[in-house]
Length: 237
Image (cartoon, rainbow, N blue to C red; front, side):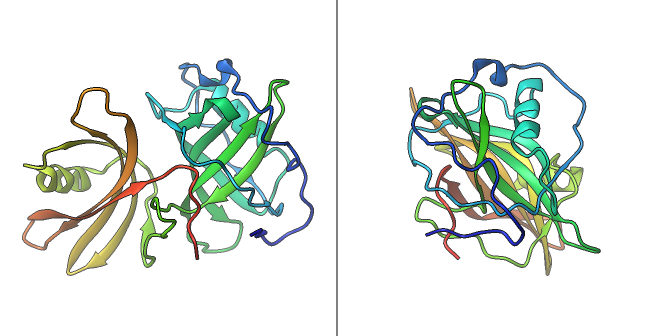
């Protein structure tokens, strides 16, 4: 199934999946100042992405090479601002790379949302956008709506405190916070936090999960949901 964002044209979308290979220079570890957000109204054709074979990034902090690659892929696109905030991982055999981005439609009072942006780089250094997707679990189920995206992926003190309280005593899987995604006002607060997840077992691979934490009015906190995130799986609307 193909879906298109509203707008005109589809430039840079015709790279074959075969032959795409990662450029090792894009996976460096140099630091760089935040680059200007990218805007786009270009319709993005949602191309099927191979699932499986994805490797979580050792560090999610963006590097010079990754920022340059992202900027190159979205160059000249307008209508939605895409701000890359974390590098999540790659599928090296196919040259695929996944970024966490904060997306905001260029419209007064538009509410931002966090998206997964998939890029493909071939052996010649050409790069294209393969997909811009919502978070989904392994079954393709989207997360429930009604949440407000955070202004920054860093965990504020009150969120970190609630997270630490809620995770006390949880065993079997190590969770490492990567990004504070969203909050929801209830009788208290709900928080969604993207985490790296690794089963406590020798040789276990690292993946991602969204941990939902509820902070009650009395300051107590508990985990209400943990949803494994499968890179390459698109949420079904």
